[in-house]
Image (spheres, rainbow, N blue to C red):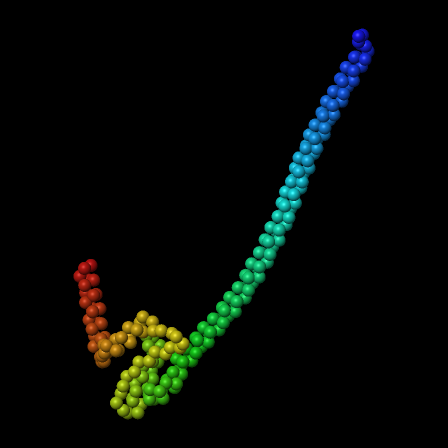
Length: 205
């Protein structure tokens, strides 16, 4: 049986052509798949980059808004505190001023205000100021037995200071006495000390 060389060659060429078509078809699909995969990756990267840019942009805007709100709130609270502090300072100043005025009025008019309470004639009050405000010689103007009373004038919740407490304690412990000073004797003693000091200076020189 004779073999037709032409038919064989045609068959071989056909098979080669089919194989080539199949190969390039697969290669083309592979290239397309790789291109699609690369395109998807690039699209994802671009989308991620755009999303991150959007987040940064809106985060900055949100941070700016939050900072502005915080500044506005802080400024409002600061103004509120300043106004309240100023009102309190004015109130305290007025209160202290009123207490000072009342204290001075009390010191000046205490004899007239407390005279009836302690049954002391206002004429019997003597103003000292420190370390006690007044000494009253009760009964002196009425030619009666004299009682000596020490008065310290306070207003509000004021307390005695250290020196005032010392005077109070001395009076309560009866560490009080009466002395008569002969001023002529004092002058003579002073002159004598001066003469002695002068003589000592002369001897030493």
